Length: 143
Image (tube, rainbow, N blue to C red; front, side, top):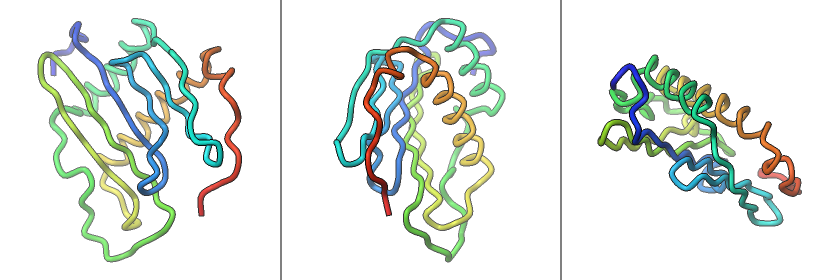
């Protein structure tokens, strides 16, 4: 990964519980999808600023996200429901990387933990946007 953010840097992260990964932050399309649980989903057009994208890229650079492999494997025999799952697509300098992790088997790798922290960091940025605040509240919950 280049130290400076390349012009083609973009990412998409889908996340949620188990196979219900309806939440999405998509810098390719400048859109955010919010899982409303009982009400399906709501979409907002949200463009991250260049400074926000640089701060996200810096975190990805520091964790060498493009060099990550086998982020989901822990070897644990444990299982839990519901479980978190994230699916990432990241483009950097002409290269695309796909990463998926879940905590279905209780333990997560250090790389998966880093991706979770990164996703939460991005979520915090998105949740400050006026277009996100205007989305309806979720109703209900997952078991």
